[in-house]
Length: 517
Image 1 (cartoon, rainbow, N blue to C red):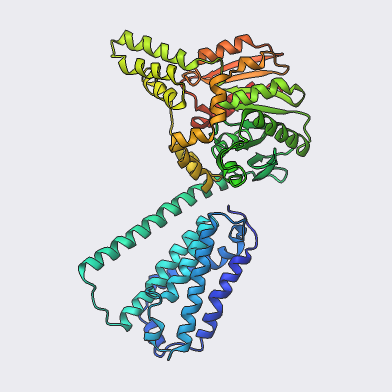
Image 2: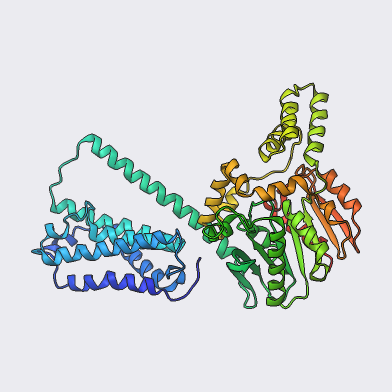
């Protein structure tokens, strides 16, 4: 979004706009100039400003050009349909007697279609290009241009007032459309703001997203850094199957000056899942071993592309299982291993439960629900029963420092439609777990001790001091058991498991301080 460059789509739209107007100059309705004298000067001023802005913006941003077909392409389709309707409206006029009533006759029930349709078309184009400048320009143009022609139409026609129910429905429809436009504009504006403020600007930098083939699947990635010769960090998200690539934008802002940061959606989730849904609809290839192979290919790709002998691995939550296994197995490719919310031994939920139970008893609270939830989990260790235990235990594990990072995700320049689709899919917990059953079975049966405890590179663990997923004590126990040339563990005081997303600046600063150069 917000990429300067020539837009051929914008140029075509402007041709479709101006050519009929050129013919109209010689085919104006009778007495049209008489009506012009009555135009509101403020609306005329807004119209002129809007016309200049829309024309310039349509030409200088390449975001309006064709991209690979996706759901977002619907907006371009709507823009094209609006322009085709605009052309057809002119055809009707040129075939008529060319008087004012012909000029302001409705088209498909749209009043002043000659003014409304091109404004709508460029508005849809602005949404397609995620360009707030176009939306602001369209708003200015729409108020002026449509306002002027609605005024002329009232002068031309003696319009009867619609009955009250119809006026109410029309008012509600207008309000709904205005609300939709407002939400879209604010969202795009926030995404544009973050992009303009924080995108990579250096000539030797990289700001790139796309798909790379890993293990026979096209997998989504984002790469950011101000200098491609800097060391490479590969971020391994948690879950399982809970990609946060769009949110890594925020902490990578503080890393990108010194590192090239690569984040990707692992096999079987997020954009990667939807990209490969036709060939692997049931996620049959999404298992822990295959993710290890995918990561190995990604590491080799990063090493070759950026001329690095080794990379830095940073895993979060479940990603620490992926990362620690890979680091132990491939010491020749990893300079540092960093575990954020590092997983430890199996049974961490039992540890958290026991701690919560003791605190509840000491407070004199009724522990019946908590104990029953844990009994169900012991008999049937499903993700649903595990989350039930956590929901009761969390009442006794207060996290003083929290922040809702969902708004960050929603307004990230890298938030896409498929990210939203995956989030909605996760709301159906049963379907989500079934889709990733192999990975959930894995974390119920394995822990990091199974990979060994000897690392041949520096190891760093970073946790929120109030992390109970996994509990900090379980992470510390694993930390004490490992052997490494250099190892350090740091707690970020007051924060919990999601500290990289909730407090990206402090997390990034701690990370940079802990990496062994």
